[in-house]
Length: 133
Image (tube, rainbow, N blue to C red; front, side):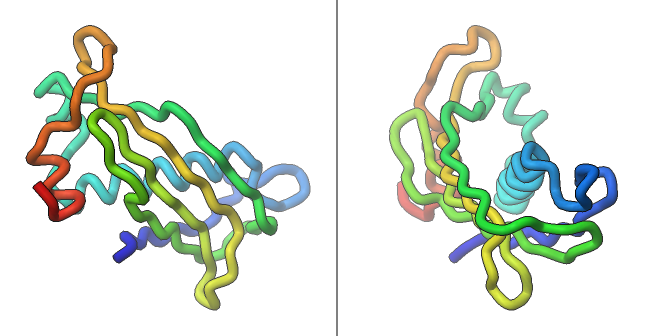
């Protein structure tokens, strides 16, 4: 089941044409991933204190239609794949009618905060996010 995070498009999110500036979709998706982790009990500052960070490794993004100032939209986030040190999030920005505005597959890698080297995603995090140990 997808995690759903509501957003509103603010004036500061838009360009001179009144549509969301392309880089701001990345912020919407980042906020939704952070909130998804938070919902599962993982605060990023606490993970950092445990020497764990999640960093974006790769992203494939499709800008489907322009989102505009003051729209109420929802970021739907699911874990599409979980591996040893990485996971892929499938994220879609939709309106209340289910129309897609932007879709991204985001590969995130688990690294240690002290050395910035890849490490296995801790089992308790995997289990909480996927329900599988």
